[in-house]
Length: 90
Image (cartoon, rainbow, N blue to C red):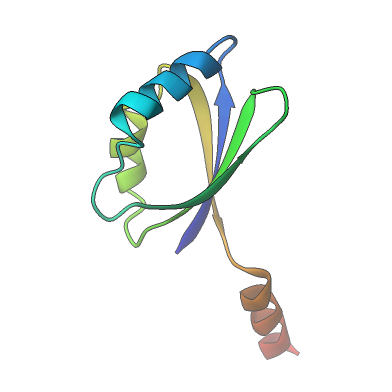
């Protein structure tokens, strides 16, 4: 399943986030896959697309980052999957 992770950086945390990522990597537990990410121009919000069959793995991952921001984790589907699901209802 796909998830959009919306990370809200705490004020002034962006330099530390990038330093930690550079030194330690994403620190993802096995079974949680990073796909891609986008960061707003003010370095306040990061949108990360991830995949896992076990959403409980997010709790493990967040232990490494919760001191630097807050997170919203939203299950999502691709546009093609959404179109197919809607078509099946018609």
